[in-house]
Image (cartoon, rainbow over all chains, first blue to last red; front, side, top):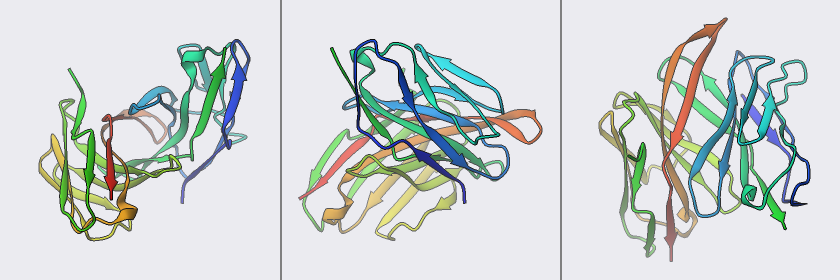
Length: 115
Length: 120
């Protein structure tokens, strides 16, 4: 079946450092790819998404590019802030048919930014 | 206006009890889900419903029974709670959109704030 493999955490960086969180996937068909973020004590929020190969999703300074040739969707940010501390989840959409869709998640990567 | 809301936010209960978690979405979506997040933050789908019909049921003990009275609501009832049921339960909803070209289709899921269930 479809699966998502995500960089193991935790990741600790200093403020203004460059961030990369790796994500690779295995899928049949044409999945969309997502990054969700979970801030401490909160629910899941969509951070960005890409729906087809070579699409770049971006939001709040974060970017990820859908790379079909390497089956990857790595998350990057040029300069992280303390407020970016959260757990980040890579996910793909399994669309078996209308009404039968679901998200498959990676294991999550806990990111801590220190001032 | 909260898109996907679930109650309660926290639930502490004793082993053997029966409890329910409620979920409502005001997005007009056709599909709703329950996901379970374990202590290591791993998220796994439990159920999905489309227009009140059960679509996905992923190897979940039959002590867990979802109920969808209408397409805007999906409740989760758990019988005979066990210690291992302690987790955060997330409700979500989604709508599959128009084709994007090839076989890709627009899809996005919205999540509730989660219910932290602690069984003691």
